[in-house]
Length: 621
Image (cartoon, rainbow, N blue to C red; front, side):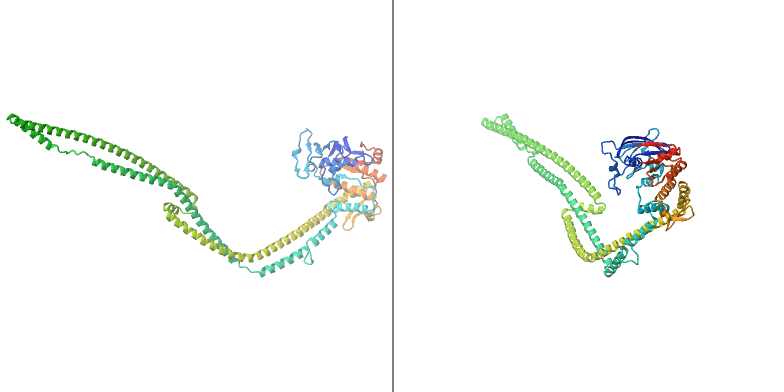
């Protein structure tokens, strides 16, 4: 991988700066506080972003490198991967995720995983190097100008840590000691006193003893609960029936209006029929006697007329004739008047009869209309009741038998009221039984509460013990993992490291140190020119610094398939001219495929590169 171009819009003290980098050695010169470390942080920030958390620092990197002016806090980096893929990254440091483009200028940001905490992990996916590993291998930061004995020991320990665990800040021995101490302090053993495991075991034993001393008949509780449930079910069943009866009563009450209408119409019909009967009686009384006898009048008049004719023919006494004639006329007039009266009376009766017959017909029509209306009301009532009955059956189909619903609909209100009263009395009796049952139940529950508290305390203690044992198991798993990793490191990786380290140190020390070993309990052992093996902490700080750099170079080759840039920040502070000459020649000859960035405030590196005619790219910031 090669970094080709840097554009810094604003980052710390660096503003509006563009830097082009070459393939092999790039010498980046600047006096102290000129911004070399800031540039180094910019490169790392372009790959991984800038943290807003302190991470054990006085101020977060975000606040430290944010421009004081209104300058844009952003920049761009262009680099080429080993497969010749060209990548451009623009990052606004105030935002979590950068914009990533390919050589065609296409935005490929979404092609990479985006972590909620870390943001876009494009550089990790491309190189398999995370930020921590980047600072542990690829980027080797500046050391202090002078190291005292304790700091020299720390550097020696870091070298030993890398060889034993692969991490410069992790010591296998100290880690195992801490884990063993953690087990003693936070877990405990059968032989310890006052530790978490001992305390919780004592709690469990005490609670079990108290629990055994408390005897409670759980069967009796179950029986009371079952009885309580049965009573509640019966109450519910009867309450449902009461609700059903009240519903039916309400339906019947609503149908009373129709019944009243029918009753009123029946009364009206009776009244109308009585009227017909009365009219019929009057009609019978007023009937004309068709057999009225007028024969006597006719006979008398006929006899008088015959007598008048006889006397007239026999020429009888005129006075007698006149009297008889007058009598005949009088009789005739009387009969005529009588006839006229009879006719008038007959006509009157006929008129009255017609009137009564007309009234009877009208009343009969009214009766027929009332009857139709009654039939209609009755049909509607039957349909309504049937509809309501169907609704009730649907509502109570799972609660009450259909035959019982039918029976209640057909019963009169008096009988229904009796049933309702009986049900209410039964519910009162059941509620009294339920109350008695609850009193018995509460008496037992009061005793049971103490047992429940003990069981809860026991479970909490068992859970507490389980957590303690989980912690112990986790620590042991960690110990096993570290032990296995350490064994694998010692058997497979450490020999490879020490072999590569020996080759590198041999070259950069002009064959002064040829063989390096790592031995448990002793650390790093170095073979001197005379064949003697000495502990590395007896070497000069310059030599230890060489070992440290050599180890980092060796480790870098193992962590990724990419030929990563070697970024060196003032790492040659303790190198004399000979060592510096050796290391620069070594880097030039053995890392031709790696881009090398050397940050320095000295001209020594430049002079040595020019004396050895090594081509380099000089950048003055």
